[in-house]
Image 1 (cartoon, rainbow, N blue to C red):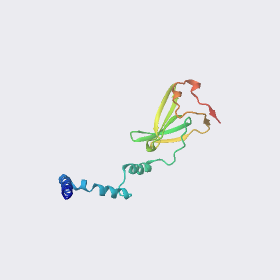
Image 2 (image 1 turned 90 degrees about the horizontal axis):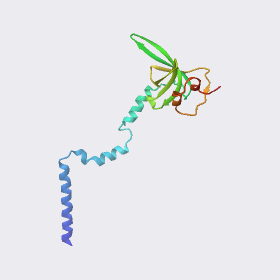
Image 3 (image 1 turned 45 degrees about the vertical axis):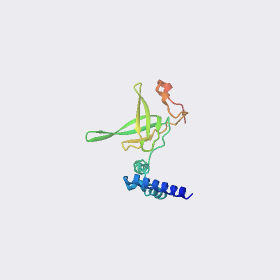
Image 4 (image 1 turned 60 degrees about the horizontal axis):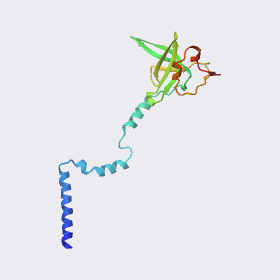
Length: 165
């Protein structure tokens, strides 16, 4: 029995010596990893994640005075056009047919008809070059869809939306 006890102690010693020998060539970071992970998990605010940093940067760039976008509403989008040294605001009037909500990357798709041809433009909602305002007296359209892509196929009077005053 004493011989087996001595043998088990020797095997335990040889395992610990091989473990320390295998860690000898590695940096001390690997040896201290469990302690560092325990220290990080308990402390809040010592490390700043990239997503939190991006949220702080994006929140500063968001527009505060945006109108409420609803699908089917008529809007006038004022697009700032820079030509040489001069800049002017070019109005674009149409119907909102789609809206993509993604924080700072939110966009609105506006469709209008010019000389019988449908034209669509996608405007970034929070861009400093675009201003949005609702058309006064246009009423509230009766819409049951989130995207009005079916208007692309319609022509003439059938392309109009039913309006509730």
